[in-house]
Image (cartoon, rainbow, N blue to C red; front, side):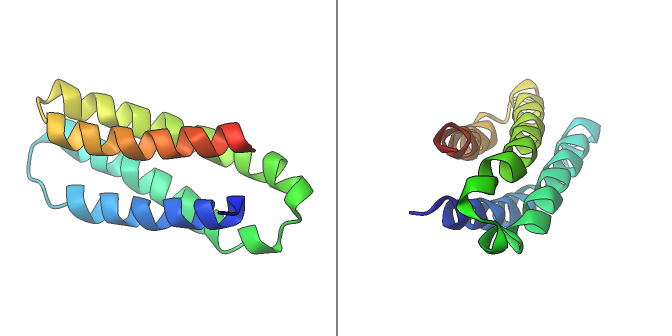
Length: 107
């Protein structure tokens, strides 16, 4: 699968994450986690539309900073869920975080 396609797939997954976790009334820490997730989702969605237009040689310089920020956002969010005892949700986010990391390594 091409890097651009994998990036678009991550944007879709981030939409699913926001939909899955935004409806949970678990208090301030979870609300903060959801806001971090939305930030990551916005960054991915913003770039998702443009990825196909960027030549392959420039993908690394264009996507790496975005993916690093999304990875950091997801990592903070995952830790918040772990601290709240929501291990299933944290595990789900960890899987997405790993996809971001693998894509970063492939760039």
